[in-house]
Length: 473
Figure 1 (cartoon, one colour):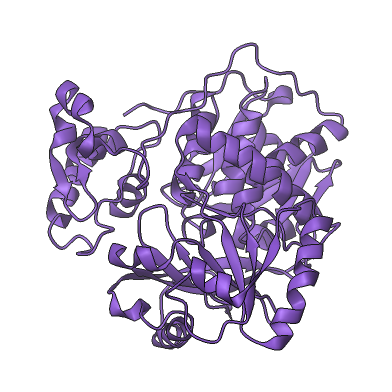
Figure 2 (cartoon, one colour):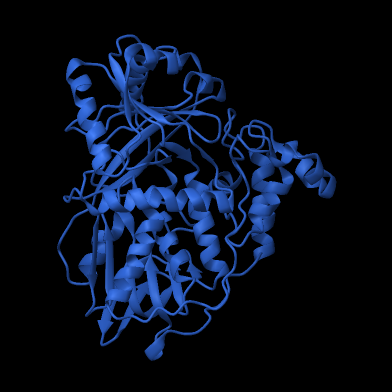
């Protein structure tokens, strides 16, 4: 295993680091990657044993154009900017992206009348490619759609992306550029004294000159440690169903509901892994760890899915999962700086945070600069990492004769449902940020994510995980 490098230099004024980032989700990892290109020492801290373990791993995985954001908000600007930044980064690093486009389907006269307003909102957000289509064209694009659609609004720029690879790529680049990754470090206390902040974690103390709170569901708790009481995170559970790959021809593009005051509703979308996804639900909870699925959620999605595409449930549901979104009182992102305490809050980052992540990072750099923090660039930084490809569009290792000829492990399939090879599993277990459990290995390779959910390959996968753990000591 490649050990995380030590910081290029300690933080100024006797601190361990210049910046500590709390939260190694997609936003925290994007900030770490941006800061890693500067001559400052940075730590990325998370309570979990892997990056992207919270909200970032369980969302709808859509690369949004930002067409439906509220015009004039910080969210609308950062989503629009992030769309282009992340799209370009995906090309550089090999993050799976499919530009399928989307259509909002109107099922009532009221929804149909709303479509021109949505197109106008998109134009206000700088996206000018939406166009309204008739019911006939909706069914031409989506023959499997249920009866009763009255028309639609096409958003050609919407895309699907691999959220797992995105977070991992950002964090990997950060670590390779000297960011120190502290996993299994739950943040439990923050104390400021002069220009130094002490961050007490479950695994020791760190000192820093700046603290960036990108803790997602826990952001309000950390914010209160700094003396604030400005927002409360309500965990909003979204349950989703994943259908077998045989369902994919029914859903060639993202099918969106027309949003209402109650929310954005349930969508049907293809995934970059060749499946179809239905969801999410929206249930406000009090428990920030309640990521289990429910009988009620399944029944709700089954009802909605049958209305949207009656034949969808002819195919098997291979997985059900739930994610928690960090819902707050504000309808916009809450990103604020406290120069006196050298503290930046990043709160209320909803599902659009995946798309906006790299733009949020650039915004944070601007806030640091505005606070008078010197941000000299590094003379030399590493190239963005080339990530293992786990999508369906480009060539996978099992089908690459040249790669197999060079390394026979890429010709040995361990997970037959997802065509995952021994070489890919080995690479994931010895990467810059290695997989440490079955869930982490699944996110890096797709192993055990297929139709049998690990029934056939699970024992071999676990054995390789155990051996890798023993090798790490």
